[in-house]
Length: 141
Image (cartoon, rainbow, N blue to C red):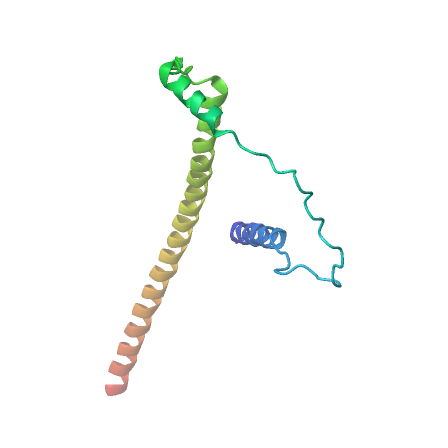
């Protein structure tokens, strides 16, 4: 029961923290009217493009294609990356197996106690039937 309560508390806490962190108003508060005039761009500040330079660069790149880069083979996995993979896969697996083992033990104990109660109930019911049948035989005679 405590295990279930702990799990529910952690679930609720994680959901509430995520929901609270992403909460913000959909529309920003607007106060007043802005009266500042946007500045006009000064005349003659536009830049002109010389497309002939681009054409010469294109012709040069066609004449001298770039050399392909040599890619070195990657290094084998380092110890830290192996540790990260083992912990990333192993830790959740270990936790899951531990929880399942705990629940399996709990279920076997509960089923054993339920079987004892069931056997006791069956014996009492059989004794009650025998007593009733004996009483009915005595009443008839």
